[in-house]
Image 1 (cartoon, rainbow, N blue to C red):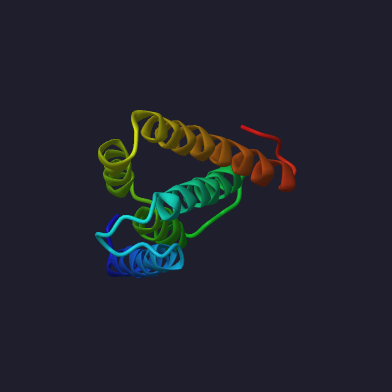
Image 2: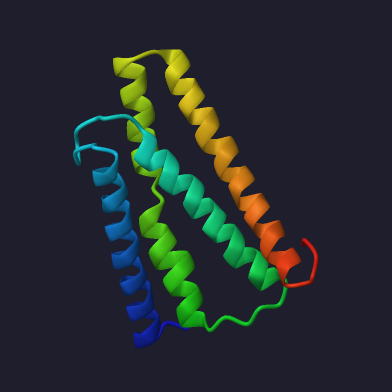
Length: 134
C-alpha cells in the first residue's frame, strides 16, 4: 500500500543513492557526460548488486524489515545508485572510442561480477543469520 511514509522512504533513499552515485563519478575523475572510463558504473553496479544480495538474503532468512526501510534501501537507494542506462552509455562509448574487445570485456565483467556479488552476498546474509542459503 502506498502511503506518505513509503513515498518519503523511496524519495529519501533515491536522494542518498544518487548522491553516492555522483560521488563515485567524481572519485573516478569522470565528468557527468565526459568519458573517463566505466569504472564508476562498474563499481556501483557490483557494490549495489552485493547490497541487494544482502537485503534479499536477510529477508529470505526471515529478517523482519519494515516496509519503509526495505523500500528506502531496495527501491530508492539501490535504484538510484545502480544504473543500467549509464552501463549502456559506457559500453557504447567503449565501442565507439576503443574496441569491441574492451566493450565486450566490460559488458561481461559487469554482468558476471554483479551476479556473483549478488549471489555471494545473498549466501553470506543467509548463512550469517543461521538459516542457510535459499
